[in-house]
Length: 281
Image (cartoon, one colour):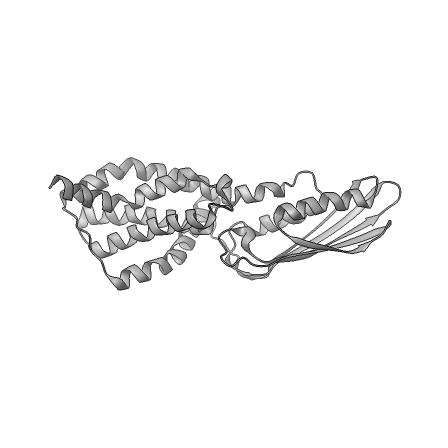
């Protein structure tokens, strides 16, 4: 399942939860929910948000595709692609590939530059904070060979230098980049940045869903401690705001603001009920 499909599912779930949010707020207000703080809970929940998000993604993939994801713990996944195109010279192909590498933020070096063959090596260091797919470390090579006439043969391989706990579309992204570097027409690596659903944002939105679910349980059976309720709420709000802070310069144009705002709203439900009680007495 691609990030785009996951984002659409998240958006639909958000709309459903927004519809029941007035009842959640009203019920919490009637129950006179009050803010509660527990250091252990507030420290634990940000770490729990990662496995919770992975469990939710597995559930979504299972429902969408009708099968449980079977690809786990992939160490340094890679992709390979080859292509043959018509071009006047190798230089025109090298220029095109160089532009694509620059757009992806990859550093590259032309190891061999001849009329009949050429080789480009590229790499990218891992970001200090990996907040999206292109924040990982990559490396690879592209070989170009001038065939008879104007036919150019290209071969590319790329390696993602990290371990994927669960494969939820990352392999297709690696293959898409590889295909693009082989100058395949259907591939559009320039859109990868815009299609990427930041992991931290997905964690925050997931926790906002959990906030609504916990609110429902609290409204129906009064089995949830207020410290857990406000802990989940605070984790959701804090994670989404953290994503905004770190990605405002890198991914402002590709941000999914609708998920940001609905996530902040859903995560704030306990606070809205509590503040309303205080102001209205």
